[in-house]
Length: 186
Image (cartoon, rainbow, N blue to C red; front, side, top):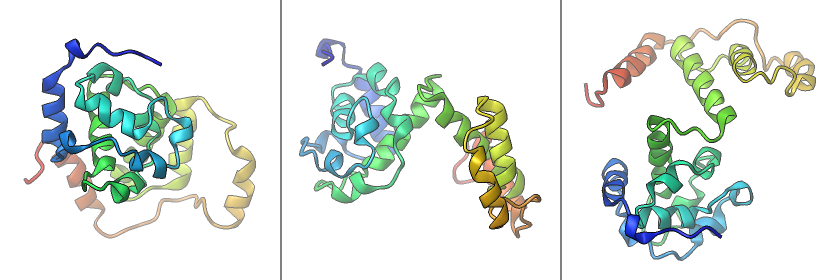
């Protein structure tokens, strides 16, 4: 068990997480319902309730360097179980963004997949599965990962050779452009 020095609490971190998530994290009383319902707890370095406590105590480095942030599937189980109506999944998402901004990506393959997915959506208006798979394999170096599943997926039409044509592709590209400019209500 790691020991944290509460004297080194970063209170600005607590305020920033609350401001960005619009959640009152201080109201969490560590009931553990979020952790009890989380399907990924077995893989986390810190459980969801521990992450919430680390945020409350201003342990910025521990939170942002946590692999739990990157393994969170955003399934909302924690949020639906919270008796204080804290959107815990949103808090995890905000912390993941903050970790990305700070240059922490403890789970490289998850970050590569997320980046590849977003690039595919930006380019095609939705995920282009074959292109996404190729981009992920190229960037991650995991060339033969799940390659045994490719014949079945191809036969079932799950990996089309061309991206789907969708309406509103330009609007999706503008969302990404607006995000890069930093505006959320432009």
